[in-house]
Each structure stands twice: as C-alpha cells, then as structure tokens.
Image 1 (tube, rainbow, N blue to C red):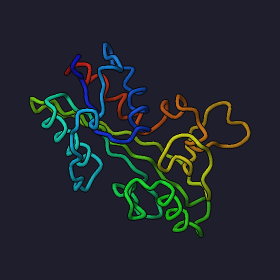
Image 2 (cartoon, one colour):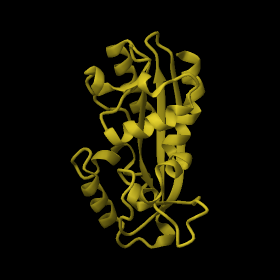
Image 3 (tube, helix red, strand yellow):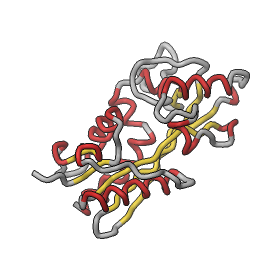
Length: 208
C-alpha cells in the first residue's frame, strides 16, 4: 500500500510523537504515515528566518520529491531574556545539530545568573501541510513555561527536561513537572506541537 502522508523528520522520537498526535485525523491509519527517511527523501537546507518558513521549505521539498502530501514542522525554544533565542537555531544552539545534551548545557550556562522570575520561555511550533498540487497551509502552537536551572526527567527530547509548563496536570502535587517528567499523553495534550498538529488535522483530513 502506498503511503498517504509523509512526515519531514528523520528523528525517531519526533516521528513517534507526531504519529500519536495525528491519530485524531479521521480515516488516517498510522500505517499510512511514513517518515521522509522511509522514502529516501533528502533533507533540504533550512534557511528560512521563521519557524513557518522552515516548515514550508521542508514540506514543499518533501511533497516535490515523493509526490505524496507532506507534513513538516519547525519548532524550538524561545527564551524571553535571550530575545527569543535559540528560536529557529534551537537544534544547533551548541554548534552541533541535534546534540541535545550540549544544547542544554550551553543554554543553562547562559542563564546561570538569571533569577526564576525572569526565566520565562516558550516552545513554538509551526506545522505545515503541502500537497503535490501546490496546496499549502500552516498552523502554529505555543507552550508557555519557566526554565529550570538543571534538567529533570527522562521523557521527551530536546529542551523538554528544562521547561516547566505553566499549566500542570492535576497529579503534580509534589511540585511542578518539566515536559520530560510528563507522560507522553500529558505532554501531547498541551504541547506546542500537539496544538499545531491538532489544528492542522482537519485540514489534512480534507486534503487526503
């Protein structure tokens, strides 16, 4: 069976997360959703200056290369006192793309003297759908929170261990939890990526 939707990611963690979120798309079976790597699609240069531009760049390239409707996202952490950085450079903040540990270490060192009241930040995600006939649509999601002084939790990926969401699950009675301390279901329910892809879901359903 040919895939009905291809996701512009080579990140296994993100692929699993996106498949779970896209389960809300009516009539879309998880088996119908594949990753760019499964089809041998190359990764385009992400030279946009916004999350939306980079998401569209990736989705356009993937739809063109595969002939299948493509979904891509670009996401990152925007820290208030850093003027919105790392932003679109979140995955390569330390200079090595995808090195989560190095990115976290550098970010926390840069914020070492910043008090809790000024450690506000937000995860931002732009999710784009591009179809082979040229249709394009983008949705955005935001998760506000506060940054910790040290990583906590083993779930998630990226900067999840250092962001404490403003809205906490009811069971967090021992103290606020980071995104990496939430279950996958709890995180997807409030995450920037979950918001963006749930908003995109009816558009995907209408175009498949």
